[in-house]
Length: 154
Image (tube, rainbow, N blue to C red; front, top):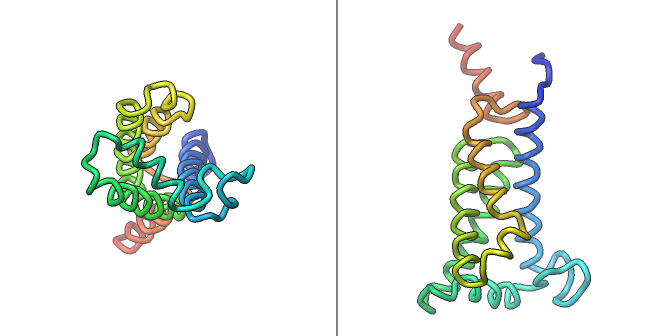
């Protein structure tokens, strides 16, 4: 068994952090953290989230706004699950970086840069870029498949 090092711990920690942040946000907009106005909920339901999403995407044509909210939610869910189980990590990490960067740009345009800094959106995007650049991802399906493939070829 390979000895744990700071890179393997760091990439796992980052995968879990990004995944849990995405899953928490999706859970909130579906009401799992409580109803609107409850202490643990930011939105509490889809309608409150859609209102926020429309603010963030205020520059987008109105007919696209709900699509953007649904697309972001679907992407957050898929990317979170891929990162959580460690499958197609490079793809999921780079996809997460793009999604977070687009979110940060939209927030900056519509709300201002301060909120992007307060919510560490740029840091999340940068962390995802680094995660995608890591050559080997310990504790992942990708790593298992790579080892299985290389041992089968011996």
